[in-house]
Amino acid sequence: MAKSKGERRKEAKADVAPGSDGKCDILSLSNNQLLAFLLKFLVVAAALMIVWFYCVGAFYQSVVFAFSKPVILLMGYTKLQIAALNLGNAYLVNFNLVPLVALAVATPNLILRKRLEMLAIGIPILFLLHVIDILVRFPMYLDHSKFAEMVYVSIGIVGVAVPFIIWFAIAVSFHGAGKR
Image (tube, rainbow, N blue to C red; front, side, top):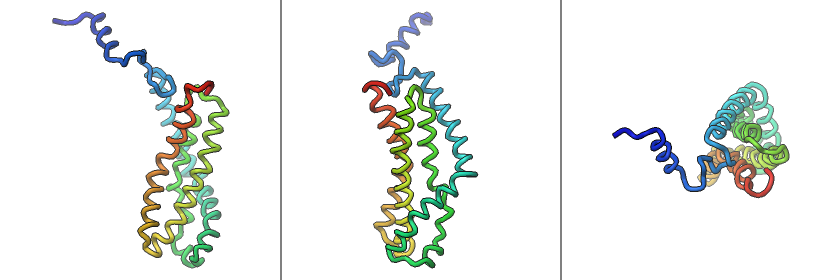
């Protein structure tokens, strides 16, 4: 027998966890607000990726490489070896700044101080990971170091997660503790 609209609505409410009143626990957003946040994040990230690819990425990579080069020389590698690896133009590997900035921009109901905190913590951490990423390539490629290869792969995996971990720690974890 067909159920009435009221019975179907009652069953739908029964499927929602007790006390959740149909809201997503992350940032206390309704399902529609969460969807709007995700869409805004995707749009902002896509726009920032275009800017990264055409404007910022190569410059950022040159800064990372400028910080890395003296350390590479201290590690005992020559200028010829540095030139041979040609890592100065590898700027797409550092794109994980894009989701960090996109999360800072797109997260709803986040005060400016928290957005700036997210960037002030995240950008130096990611910069350090990018420098280490450059540094470990030399022993990995030139000395065939398995340890350097493990560090390189780990940075690749961790680097993708770091923007989201920082966002979670600042925007989500402390949501219940006073103002965001």
